[in-house]
Length: 188
Image 1: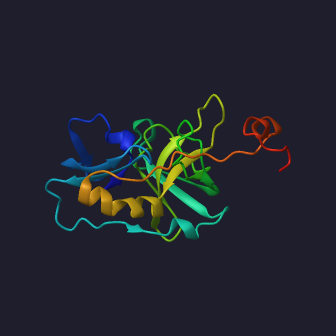
Image 2: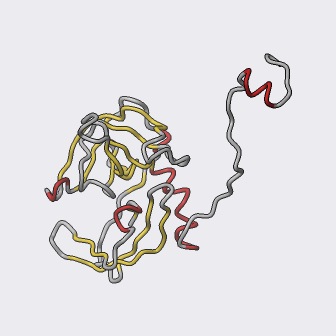
């Protein structure tokens, strides 16, 4: 089961409740705080449990319909419909360089985290993850694109974590002050 890292980060006992109210104990297989993705597994999954189909978040376009499922404020099995407002949104998690979220106006509230964001074909295209503070704005929610989660899945399954390189370089404009500091001619 793909979910959010922040949902399971400090958990000592993970239980998954299905729509028929049966609960199953789960364990963490892997997690990645940088992308807010986690993979958990039911210890004894029930027979006949049908997985959802993972779609292609790269194929989404601004304006495509999206359906968010979750349990906002404890209201289980809530579905909200909206559109994909934008793609490639960064800076949601305090400027995390790995932010690359889908933005949606489908209502995502506290309790929706870890739930699926579906396209109209019934395919999961995102994992609901964050909202803009109600004090700042409402109707602005974010989801981890499912293609990002799918790319991390092999590492989460094999190693329990994601390993990535980091160059430690940032790009900026060469201002006149920086040019002088580097002993360059301004405008060079």
